[in-house]
Amino acid sequence: MAKFELKKVDNLARWDEFVENSNEGTVFSLSDYLQGMGKNFQLFFVLQGMEIKAGVSLVLSDDGERVIDDDLVIYNGLMFDPMLGQKDVKAKFQKFEITEFVANELASKYKSVELALSPFFIDLRPFLWFNYNSEKPEDKFIPDLRYTSLLNISSFRDSDEDEELAIFRNIDTLRQRNLREGKKRGAKVELDFDVEAFMSFYIELLESQGENVSEEKRFRMRGLIDHLIRSGKAMGFTLINEEKEPIYKLLHCFDSKRAYYLFGAGDKSSKDRYKGTFAFWESFKYLAVERKMNEIDLEGINSPKRGWFKLSFGGTIQPYYKVKKSESVEAKIFP
Image (tube, rainbow, N blue to C red; front, side):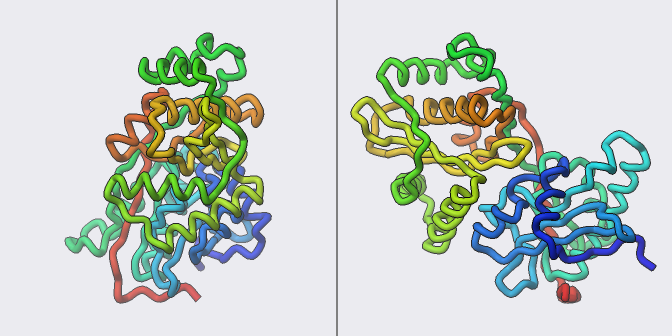
């Protein structure tokens, strides 16, 4: 008899409780987020007898035969029961066994597998050692090293004066100048988010960078934003300049652990150089002071321009991994 069992989740409230408590769990695996992102998904518990030891969150292809990487689901994959602990030798071994079991199950049941593991998923060895002696790349899980920035925003609660804050002293000098300029010119950030106005900013921004935004992605983004705001899992912010014009919009989502930057874009015709910096800063302040958030994940620093902008606020560089196993003709789709 197998030590572990992979069982489909039939109680979403129990699943969400598990994700919130798991160190590896993020908003991107909560049922509200997954139901709003407009793709096929599947959730599993890993059971040992009747005990839940781990959870697995997957995004599936339309035909259900492949586990896919989706750009609206930043992290997913495997999450452990927090009762397993972090430092105990037995717990580390059990996490290894569970990961090994999940890697084998997914490889045998899906034609291909792509996962974007949480930054707090530590031990990648079972994926790296899968079919270790095979010389065929398609037999293996291939890792892709990625980075994000985790920013502690708790010091916003220490003072009403920005320049007295530890976080202000740690940001790039250019960002400090941007903030002073925005404040001097009377800019303000409102808790408001017009989805269509944001989409106009966003599409214009990406097209100016030579990127195409498909109709499918536009539809899915609108649906996700509406769903997250209605379900209370996200907040939108709008920067208003001295002419009372909305010039920048951004959206953060959150779970019980931290906030996550999700989308942001500004009016390309605006010459206000402070707009991105000021919008981010004031949204951080709101999350820390009003929502009592201590940390925000700036969700990826994997391209030069966007990466440097996010890192200019300070923050800790945190690695995470995507893993991919290519097409297999022998896989049997999970019933």
